[in-house]
Length: 165
Image (cartoon, one colour):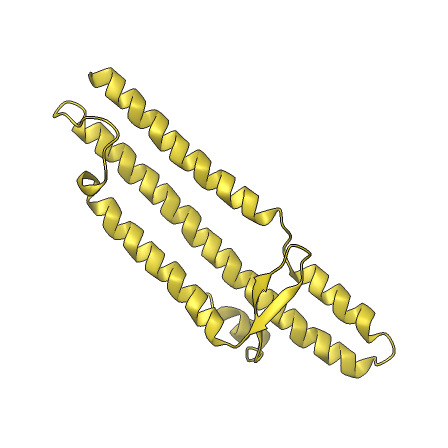
């Protein structure tokens, strides 16, 4: 749905080229429409995998000894941590898909503006690209969020171990 909705909303078909990689300077690499399907497929696959893993927290490696006293609390903490990571991952892939579509649509808009204004083409297209792309600050924010989630899971797991042992 996320892949199709923007095109239905704007009444346009996806452009032939979609952004697949953003360099450190913000430069965009372009590929075909299949890259959007791949990005969405990876997001859905990760969601399904994490959903399956969260149903069986006893199969995950243990940092602490699981006893009958702390088992329920440890497994609840693991499920919560995995579900938080699942939500963060889903939103990451939603944002990446949305941004890929935004950049692709901006490229299409840039090409339309190019036809209208041949004299200032470079300025118009550069402005459209800059508005649609995300910068280098995006990845550190995502990684910090995931690290905080994992650290919180470890902290509360250790706390549950200490209370029972």
